[in-house]
Amino acid sequence: MTRCEWAGTSPLYEQYHDEEWGVPTHDDRSLFEFLILEGAQAGLSWETILKKRKGYQDAFDQFDAKIISTYSESKIEALLQNPNIIRNKLKVNSAVTNAKLFLDVQREFGSFNQYIWQFTQGKTLQNSFNKMSDIPANTPESDAMSQDLKKRGFKFIGTTICYAYMQSMGMVNDHVVSCFRYKECAV
Image 1: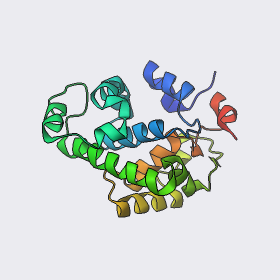
Image 2: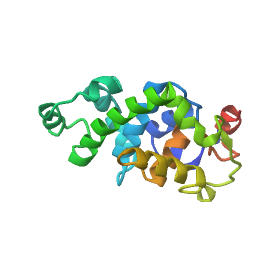
Image 3: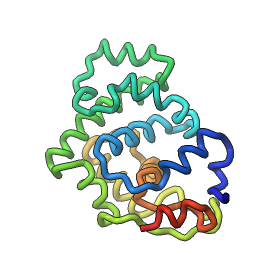
Image 4: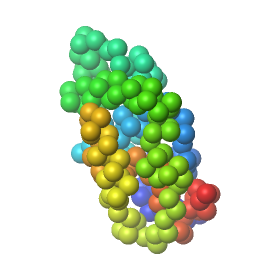
């Protein structure tokens, strides 16, 4: 079975690749989870985040934005002592800030899904890359997403993070054409 080359580097990557990466996601809770996880990943490997994903789910109330938006300073201090997450003060604080802004976007657009998928006109952008080195780090769509999120006050949301987010949420299909998931994720 042929996979994208990065997926064969660990069982954790393989499972994530085979079951989640590139699958179009429209559930607001999942969209919020990955917004926070992608930001937490900045400067680290995605494998590090996947290893801590369960810890994040437990520490951040299963990514319930309403609860996270009300976190007190003492809750934030407790998170900064939690070895099951990335204990970076800027990243933890950004999760709380982003939760508040996520709720604002839901109120404005009816759902975060409605908002975020506008950057691809509501559809998965179908790419046809033959090798991983052909895949860009950012695109005009991720640039626009990053710019708009930053304007709204979101943190840890640069264009490269936005493009990785788009890949994980299935807003783009960046499985290489030889990968068995390429056709499965094509819409």
